[in-house]
Image (tube, rainbow, N blue to C red):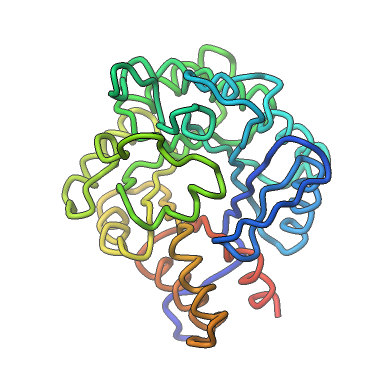
Length: 305
């Protein structure tokens, strides 16, 4: 009766990694319980997610071919585009969000256009806009730009509006830090940079006030939901954002946070389920309205009794 923070399946967004082929369900070695899945397998997973009372998924794509400009990202016949159609056809009431970025689709692994070894912010915006429109055209309920290019929310909003998708909302990865907690995701999405790192466009983990500036800019550009990523080591940022902005707030309980729990659980060092629920509750307690988490299905089974 007096519990201050409540955790519910309604809070969860479950990430899916969709790849080419058929009948593919390839385990991600650094993320026990997670898989790269072909579209037919992703549809099965989506049905399970919905049956557990989880209202939403977010799709990441692994294309068959990668190139310098990540053309697979905005191909209307791309892996994510086809996955959207198949999942919406099979589970129409499941809310489908798509990750909008270039890193999974480029042969260099960076989140934008690269020229002379540098990521070109402004030249990337048009590609992100094309990708967003392509996802909306395929039936995505929401797009979520994760690239951290300056001005990309405005560019995407403008492109969606111009192409008749003014009702498609944007969930912006607004405060995304250059974190070591993304390691397992690099395997899952096959998106490891082939040179350098992403510190030139992702945030310095030491900076707190900068996060509020970044979030404010995304809101001004038209973001409907803003996100803090990672979650666990950035609970102060989540709390700051909740106190500062009257807008829905998401937090990404990222791959490294998930994998540490799973590894310690496998070694018998912790009660994995208890720690999982404690972590998810702490993210909600800090102020997150929505949690993107690989724990979603397992947590839902517990919460559903």
